[in-house]
Image 1 (cartoon, rainbow, N blue to C red):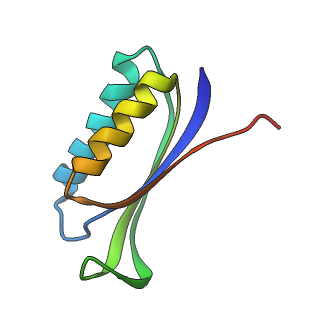
Image 2: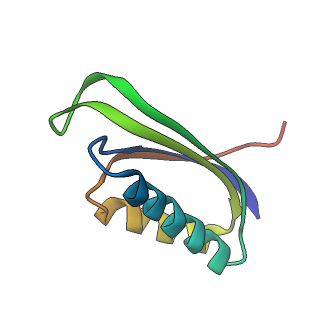
Image 3: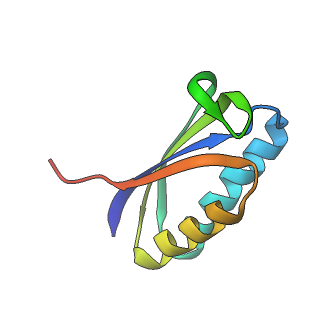
Length: 96
């Protein structure tokens, strides 16, 4: 298993409960496929450098986890069809 970092920019108008639901959904995908959540960091609302889908702010969440390729494929698929997620970046962390 490799370590990955997922940064999501979520619609800032969403309720906290809905944001937690998205985080739990992603965490569930990882753990259901024998992965491990290392850290979840909610940065909160941040002003954007440019407007994204009519929003000038975004709610940022960073999740660090260990998983295999099957989980990564499913996370990518789910985030692409989740309307509340404005943007996301999923990167593999290399060993140092």
